[in-house]
Length: 104
Image (cartoon, rainbow, N blue to C red):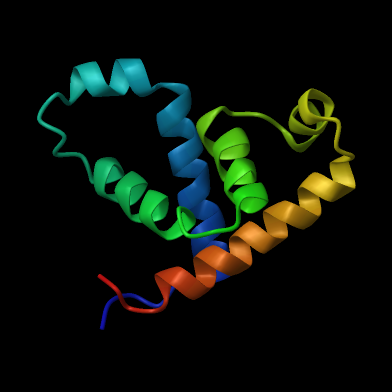
């Protein structure tokens, strides 16, 4: 069985994923062979997040792919910051469950 994921590990990984997407064009150009571990990390989290409910999946894309803050996502979609925070917590719980299922 692979590594045990914790909420702290997932939060750290999501920061790396967010950074990757904020600099995707430059990073893809600099590593055209996709040998950097970030590419595997992005794939793993995409696969885990893709089975979430649509509202939770929307949070994943908005916060981590599109680099929104809770406030900017809420403003764009008409949600309160607290609602986005609640949905992000659901996302973290979903990722924790999926990543620890051992489907590697």
